[in-house]
Image (cartoon, rainbow, N blue to C red; front, side, top):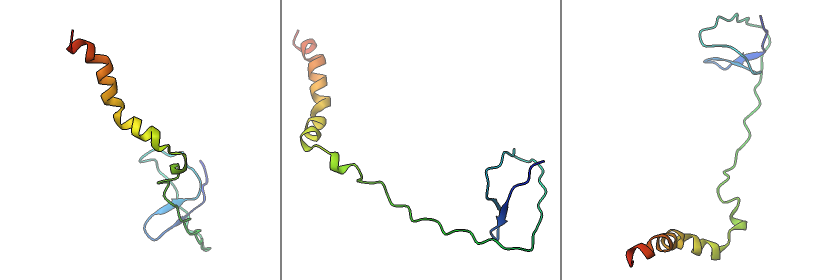
Length: 81
């Protein structure tokens, strides 16, 4: 048997620790007289554009034409053989 700390958020019981329980495994829930105040979630910022400072406009131009160049290099000799 394992004891895990957690709290009831008004809808479900949420553990404060990682638990190793399987679906439909029986548990014992003890309701205590003390209350828990969950910490507010931190504001997570988007990672979009983080690497923009490393972008090379010249390489971006080459990348747009890369597929066309590869096809010509591979199949050009087959078309005019």
